[in-house]
Structures are given as C-alpha cells and as structure tokens.
Length: 67
Image (cartoon, rainbow, N blue to C red; front, side, top):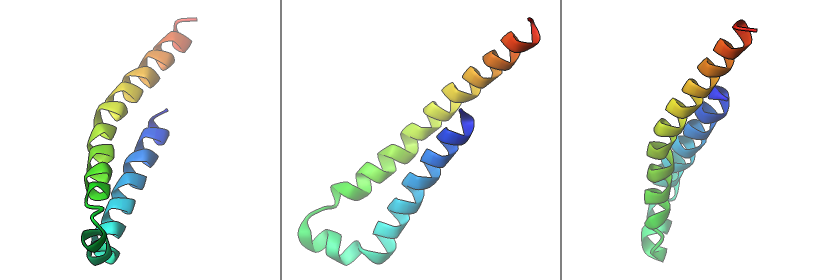
C-alpha cells in the first residue's frame, strides 16, 4: 500500500508544480487559485495517508510471519 500513497503524493506534487510553473497566469486571470490550494492540501494530506499505509503494511507483514 505504501507505493500507492507515494504515487499519490508524487501526483499531487507534480500537478501542483505544473500549475504553478506553466499555468500561473491563466489560473490567476480566471480566478482558479483554489486549484493550487487543492494540490497543496492533497500533497499535505498524503503524509498522514503514507503513515497509515506504512503501519498497515507493517501489521500485515507481522501477521504473515506469525502464521
């Protein structure tokens, strides 16, 4: 599950940076600044998700070794 959380973090970061670098003028002209905030929120919320997935994977490995 950790790779999925890392992929999500990477996607939010790449999209946010692309919007910031390539579409900043269009975003501000058309009033879509919330798109950047959405990318930032998705990226930041990915860290608790990553922690949960790391715990999930550790518990799954522990359960498999105790069988």
